[in-house]
Image (cartoon, rainbow, N blue to C red; front, side, top):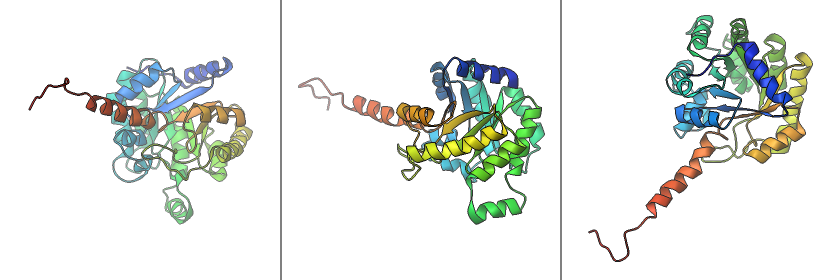
Length: 285
Protein backbone atom coordinates (compact mmCIF):
# COMPACT_ATOMS: atom_id res chain seq x y z
CA UNK A 1 0.00 0.00 0.00
CA UNK A 2 1.24 3.49 -0.84
CA UNK A 3 2.98 5.40 1.93
CA UNK A 4 1.22 8.57 3.02
CA UNK A 5 3.39 11.63 3.49
CA UNK A 6 2.82 14.77 5.49
CA UNK A 7 2.88 17.95 3.44
CA UNK A 8 6.38 18.83 4.66
CA UNK A 9 7.72 15.33 4.01
CA UNK A 10 6.28 15.50 0.51
CA UNK A 11 7.83 18.90 -0.14
CA UNK A 12 11.17 17.78 1.28
CA UNK A 13 11.25 14.89 -1.18
CA UNK A 14 10.51 17.16 -4.12
CA UNK A 15 13.02 19.87 -3.19
CA UNK A 16 15.70 17.26 -2.50
CA UNK A 17 15.28 16.00 -6.05
CA UNK A 18 15.38 19.52 -7.49
CA UNK A 19 18.52 20.35 -5.50
CA UNK A 20 20.14 17.19 -6.87
CA UNK A 21 19.67 18.74 -10.30
CA UNK A 22 16.90 16.31 -11.24
CA UNK A 23 13.74 17.74 -12.87
CA UNK A 24 10.50 16.51 -11.33
CA UNK A 25 8.18 14.14 -13.15
CA UNK A 26 4.54 13.92 -12.11
CA UNK A 27 2.25 11.51 -13.95
CA UNK A 28 -1.29 10.25 -13.96
CA UNK A 29 -2.08 6.60 -13.30
CA UNK A 30 -5.47 5.42 -14.54
CA UNK A 31 -5.19 1.88 -13.18
CA UNK A 32 -3.06 -0.36 -11.02
CA UNK A 33 -0.68 -1.72 -13.63
CA UNK A 34 0.07 1.79 -14.88
CA UNK A 35 0.85 2.92 -11.33
CA UNK A 36 3.00 -0.14 -10.63
CA UNK A 37 5.32 0.29 -13.58
CA UNK A 38 5.35 4.09 -13.70
CA UNK A 39 6.59 4.03 -10.11
CA UNK A 40 9.34 1.62 -11.14
CA UNK A 41 10.37 4.23 -13.70
CA UNK A 42 11.25 6.58 -10.86
CA UNK A 43 8.63 9.33 -11.08
CA UNK A 44 8.21 11.78 -8.20
CA UNK A 45 4.40 12.11 -7.97
CA UNK A 46 1.56 9.84 -9.07
CA UNK A 47 -1.89 11.33 -9.62
CA UNK A 48 -5.27 9.62 -9.76
CA UNK A 49 -7.71 11.47 -12.04
CA UNK A 50 -11.06 10.64 -13.54
CA UNK A 51 -9.52 11.59 -16.90
CA UNK A 52 -6.92 8.86 -16.40
CA UNK A 53 -9.65 6.29 -16.01
CA UNK A 54 -11.34 7.43 -19.23
CA UNK A 55 -8.02 7.54 -21.09
CA UNK A 56 -7.31 3.94 -20.14
CA UNK A 57 -10.75 2.97 -21.45
CA UNK A 58 -9.86 4.41 -24.86
CA UNK A 59 -11.61 7.78 -24.63
CA UNK A 60 -10.35 11.33 -24.83
CA UNK A 61 -9.39 13.16 -21.66
CA UNK A 62 -12.28 15.61 -21.99
CA UNK A 63 -14.65 12.75 -21.13
CA UNK A 64 -13.64 13.56 -17.57
CA UNK A 65 -15.14 17.03 -17.91
CA UNK A 66 -18.58 15.74 -18.91
CA UNK A 67 -21.33 14.46 -16.54
CA UNK A 68 -20.73 10.77 -17.28
CA UNK A 69 -19.88 9.64 -13.76
CA UNK A 70 -19.21 10.88 -10.24
CA UNK A 71 -15.66 12.21 -10.67
CA UNK A 72 -14.79 12.25 -6.96
CA UNK A 73 -16.21 8.80 -6.27
CA UNK A 74 -14.31 7.43 -9.28
CA UNK A 75 -11.01 8.83 -8.03
CA UNK A 76 -11.70 7.56 -4.52
CA UNK A 77 -12.47 4.01 -5.69
CA UNK A 78 -9.74 3.77 -8.35
CA UNK A 79 -7.26 5.09 -5.81
CA UNK A 80 -8.37 2.82 -2.99
CA UNK A 81 -8.80 -0.39 -4.98
CA UNK A 82 -6.35 -0.11 -7.87
CA UNK A 83 -3.61 2.50 -7.58
CA UNK A 84 -2.73 2.85 -3.89
CA UNK A 85 -2.33 -0.92 -3.35
CA UNK A 86 0.24 -1.09 -6.18
CA UNK A 87 2.42 1.84 -5.08
CA UNK A 88 5.21 1.45 -2.52
CA UNK A 89 7.03 4.74 -1.93
CA UNK A 90 5.90 7.36 -4.46
CA UNK A 91 3.50 9.97 -3.05
CA UNK A 92 0.03 9.71 -4.59
CA UNK A 93 -2.31 12.67 -5.01
CA UNK A 94 -6.04 12.84 -5.80
CA UNK A 95 -7.46 14.97 -8.59
CA UNK A 96 -10.74 16.19 -7.11
CA UNK A 97 -13.71 18.19 -8.31
CA UNK A 98 -13.92 21.02 -5.80
CA UNK A 99 -17.30 22.12 -7.18
CA UNK A 100 -19.08 19.10 -5.73
CA UNK A 101 -22.24 20.40 -4.08
CA UNK A 102 -23.33 16.90 -3.02
CA UNK A 103 -20.42 16.42 -0.61
CA UNK A 104 -19.11 17.98 2.55
CA UNK A 105 -15.66 18.60 1.09
CA UNK A 106 -13.94 18.77 4.47
CA UNK A 107 -15.20 15.31 5.41
CA UNK A 108 -14.39 13.92 1.97
CA UNK A 109 -10.82 15.25 2.18
CA UNK A 110 -10.44 13.52 5.53
CA UNK A 111 -11.46 10.26 3.82
CA UNK A 112 -9.01 10.93 0.98
CA UNK A 113 -6.23 11.40 3.49
CA UNK A 114 -7.28 8.35 5.52
CA UNK A 115 -6.99 5.89 2.61
CA UNK A 116 -3.48 7.03 1.71
CA UNK A 117 -3.47 10.05 -0.56
CA UNK A 118 -0.78 12.62 0.27
CA UNK A 119 -2.07 15.56 -1.76
CA UNK A 120 -4.94 17.13 -3.68
CA UNK A 121 -5.19 18.74 -7.13
CA UNK A 122 -8.14 20.85 -8.35
CA UNK A 123 -9.20 18.72 -11.29
CA UNK A 124 -11.76 18.42 -12.91
CA UNK A 125 -11.91 22.20 -12.88
CA UNK A 126 -14.24 24.95 -14.02
CA UNK A 127 -11.07 26.86 -14.92
CA UNK A 128 -11.13 24.99 -18.23
CA UNK A 129 -14.34 26.73 -19.21
CA UNK A 130 -14.54 30.27 -20.55
CA UNK A 131 -17.06 32.61 -22.20
CA UNK A 132 -20.71 32.73 -21.21
CA UNK A 133 -20.67 29.23 -19.73
CA UNK A 134 -17.93 30.11 -17.27
CA UNK A 135 -19.60 33.42 -16.41
CA UNK A 136 -22.86 31.58 -15.77
CA UNK A 137 -21.16 29.02 -13.54
CA UNK A 138 -19.56 31.82 -11.53
CA UNK A 139 -22.81 33.78 -11.41
CA UNK A 140 -24.84 30.84 -10.14
CA UNK A 141 -22.55 29.77 -7.31
CA UNK A 142 -20.71 26.97 -9.13
CA UNK A 143 -17.42 28.73 -9.71
CA UNK A 144 -13.69 28.52 -9.12
CA UNK A 145 -13.97 29.70 -5.51
CA UNK A 146 -15.12 26.20 -4.51
CA UNK A 147 -11.82 24.82 -5.81
CA UNK A 148 -9.82 27.45 -3.96
CA UNK A 149 -11.73 26.58 -0.78
CA UNK A 150 -11.02 22.88 -1.34
CA UNK A 151 -7.29 23.51 -1.68
CA UNK A 152 -7.33 25.56 1.52
CA UNK A 153 -9.21 22.79 3.36
CA UNK A 154 -6.61 20.32 2.09
CA UNK A 155 -3.79 22.53 3.36
CA UNK A 156 -5.42 22.63 6.79
CA UNK A 157 -5.41 18.81 6.75
CA UNK A 158 -1.66 18.77 6.02
CA UNK A 159 -2.10 17.60 2.43
CA UNK A 160 0.15 18.92 -0.34
CA UNK A 161 -1.81 21.12 -2.74
CA UNK A 162 -1.53 21.43 -6.51
CA UNK A 163 -3.29 24.14 -8.51
CA UNK A 164 -4.28 24.29 -12.17
CA UNK A 165 -4.97 27.50 -14.05
CA UNK A 166 -5.71 28.07 -17.74
CA UNK A 167 -5.44 31.84 -17.88
CA UNK A 168 -3.59 34.62 -16.09
CA UNK A 169 -6.65 35.92 -14.22
CA UNK A 170 -7.27 32.53 -12.62
CA UNK A 171 -3.55 32.04 -12.01
CA UNK A 172 -3.37 35.24 -9.97
CA UNK A 173 -6.54 34.42 -8.06
CA UNK A 174 -5.35 30.88 -7.35
CA UNK A 175 -1.94 31.94 -6.10
CA UNK A 176 -3.30 34.85 -4.05
CA UNK A 177 -6.16 32.98 -2.38
CA UNK A 178 -4.93 29.38 -2.14
CA UNK A 179 -1.12 29.57 -2.58
CA UNK A 180 -0.76 25.93 -3.69
CA UNK A 181 2.56 24.17 -3.20
CA UNK A 182 2.71 23.31 -6.91
CA UNK A 183 1.40 25.46 -9.76
CA UNK A 184 0.67 24.04 -13.22
CA UNK A 185 -0.34 26.04 -16.26
CA UNK A 186 -2.55 23.69 -18.25
CA UNK A 187 -1.71 24.37 -21.91
CA UNK A 188 -4.56 22.23 -23.28
CA UNK A 189 -5.30 18.70 -24.48
CA UNK A 190 -2.13 16.82 -25.43
CA UNK A 191 -1.38 16.28 -29.11
CA UNK A 192 -0.85 12.92 -30.75
CA UNK A 193 -2.16 9.39 -30.62
CA UNK A 194 -5.72 8.24 -31.19
CA UNK A 195 -7.48 10.89 -29.09
CA UNK A 196 -5.02 13.79 -29.12
CA UNK A 197 -5.98 17.30 -30.19
CA UNK A 198 -3.91 18.47 -33.16
CA UNK A 199 -4.93 22.13 -32.77
CA UNK A 200 -3.33 22.47 -29.34
CA UNK A 201 -0.63 25.09 -28.81
CA UNK A 202 2.72 24.56 -30.49
CA UNK A 203 5.77 24.00 -28.31
CA UNK A 204 7.20 27.53 -28.66
CA UNK A 205 3.85 29.17 -27.93
CA UNK A 206 3.28 26.78 -25.03
CA UNK A 207 6.61 27.74 -23.49
CA UNK A 208 5.88 31.47 -23.78
CA UNK A 209 2.40 31.15 -22.30
CA UNK A 210 3.64 28.87 -19.53
CA UNK A 211 6.39 31.31 -18.60
CA UNK A 212 3.95 34.23 -18.36
CA UNK A 213 1.85 32.22 -15.91
CA UNK A 214 4.91 31.10 -13.95
CA UNK A 215 5.91 34.75 -13.50
CA UNK A 216 2.56 35.45 -11.86
CA UNK A 217 2.83 32.39 -9.63
CA UNK A 218 6.40 33.18 -8.51
CA UNK A 219 5.58 36.81 -7.80
CA UNK A 220 2.86 35.76 -5.36
CA UNK A 221 4.64 32.68 -3.95
CA UNK A 222 8.40 32.70 -4.65
CA UNK A 223 8.92 29.14 -3.40
CA UNK A 224 6.17 27.58 -5.53
CA UNK A 225 7.10 24.51 -7.57
CA UNK A 226 6.27 24.92 -11.25
CA UNK A 227 5.36 22.10 -13.64
CA UNK A 228 4.66 22.12 -17.39
CA UNK A 229 1.73 20.19 -18.82
CA UNK A 230 -0.33 19.42 -21.90
CA UNK A 231 -0.57 20.56 -25.53
CA UNK A 232 2.73 20.00 -27.32
CA UNK A 233 4.51 18.27 -24.43
CA UNK A 234 4.47 14.76 -25.86
CA UNK A 235 7.97 13.28 -25.63
CA UNK A 236 11.31 13.67 -23.88
CA UNK A 237 12.56 16.28 -26.35
CA UNK A 238 9.48 18.40 -25.67
CA UNK A 239 10.08 18.11 -21.94
CA UNK A 240 13.66 19.25 -22.42
CA UNK A 241 12.48 22.22 -24.48
CA UNK A 242 10.18 23.32 -21.65
CA UNK A 243 13.01 23.01 -19.13
CA UNK A 244 15.31 25.00 -21.42
CA UNK A 245 12.85 27.78 -22.21
CA UNK A 246 10.85 28.26 -18.98
CA UNK A 247 11.39 28.34 -15.22
CA UNK A 248 9.56 25.06 -14.66
CA UNK A 249 10.99 22.57 -12.17
CA UNK A 250 9.64 19.62 -14.11
CA UNK A 251 6.70 18.21 -16.02
CA UNK A 252 3.28 16.70 -15.47
CA UNK A 253 2.18 13.94 -17.85
CA UNK A 254 -1.23 12.44 -18.54
CA UNK A 255 -1.83 11.18 -22.07
CA UNK A 256 1.90 11.33 -22.77
CA UNK A 257 2.64 8.68 -20.15
CA UNK A 258 -0.49 6.51 -20.00
CA UNK A 259 -2.27 6.50 -23.33
CA UNK A 260 0.66 6.90 -25.68
CA UNK A 261 2.69 4.28 -23.83
CA UNK A 262 0.17 1.57 -24.73
CA UNK A 263 -1.52 2.55 -27.99
CA UNK A 264 1.16 1.67 -30.55
CA UNK A 265 2.97 -1.05 -28.53
CA UNK A 266 -0.30 -2.94 -28.00
CA UNK A 267 -1.21 -2.67 -31.67
CA UNK A 268 2.24 -3.81 -32.77
CA UNK A 269 2.34 -6.69 -30.30
CA UNK A 270 -1.09 -7.92 -31.36
CA UNK A 271 -0.03 -7.71 -35.03
CA UNK A 272 3.19 -9.63 -34.32
CA UNK A 273 1.24 -12.53 -32.83
CA UNK A 274 -1.21 -12.46 -35.72
CA UNK A 275 1.79 -12.79 -38.08
CA UNK A 276 2.76 -16.29 -36.84
CA UNK A 277 2.01 -19.10 -39.31
CA UNK A 278 1.54 -22.85 -39.58
CA UNK A 279 4.63 -24.92 -40.45
CA UNK A 280 5.41 -24.96 -44.15
CA UNK A 281 3.34 -27.55 -45.98
CA UNK A 282 1.14 -28.37 -42.95
CA UNK A 283 -2.63 -28.08 -43.22
CA UNK A 284 -4.87 -27.96 -40.19
CA UNK A 285 -8.19 -27.83 -41.91
